[in-house]
Length: 385
Image (tube, rainbow, N blue to C red; front, side, top):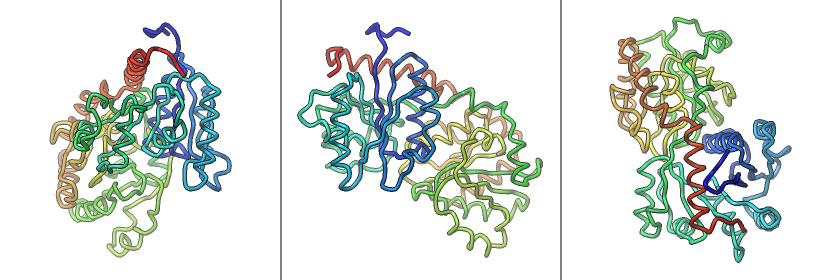
């Protein structure tokens, strides 16, 4: 492997996640693995929360199996000060070229921990479309932060609106998908069998943690409306969080047995393969939803709300169905439309794969980051600390 620096890079990824479960941490892991495959010396540092035993709660194995060194530092509450001191010593003892942070908390942690130090290239990122508080903008605008990576143009606009962050500092690189792992050829029949869903039953699904921004209430409202016209349909909800609170209302509707909750799953490609249609109901805060592009790469017909970067890839009645955020009635209409027009839905899925696969190919994404790291190092003099 060659870069214009004629050497592998030594890179540490720093995440405020304490486990590899949510989209941001999964994207970090995919990038770390891709860079390792390219011959770089890749390390990862995560948050550790009180009571986490062991660190990572059993989710770091893919990194460790790839011979990527993994460390944990407390980044929250009073314990973060001890973590900053430990991270400062850690950084001083290793000649890193790149410190790539994931989430604002990780960036702020690194910036505070390295006060007064000569630092490697430092990258931040922002993968959601929530507004940027002035206190955060000051950190992003700091001369210590060399670049900020986003996954949608609308997030770049948020930085411009702060009036503090130089737009030239912001780079848009889409989320990455392993095209071998997420393939239209994957068989989802075993998932259906394990859940007791017959092959001919229409199956809609949403892969998303039960976080507020995902607006599961909109999904359920739309599904209940759609069930009045397609009473055989089933709905699969995959993700961590408090989903039990939805069961009583679904049971009272008389359609409770049409909704299946799996909790966290590691076999997402097979889950998506089992679906007929993939749905995202978010109302705010998205960047570019990972499970949306994963579904599109697998040629699944998708329904998404018109939120943030999702509208960049879902073109209505072309690469999927795009509905206004918060409109459960229009989401229900999209569900019924897909069910009544299966050939058209399948064609949208094929066009979606063709449109998005090169944009989110994790191999190409890794090369783009490699190029960005090299450019930033050259601007900084090509040296580490």
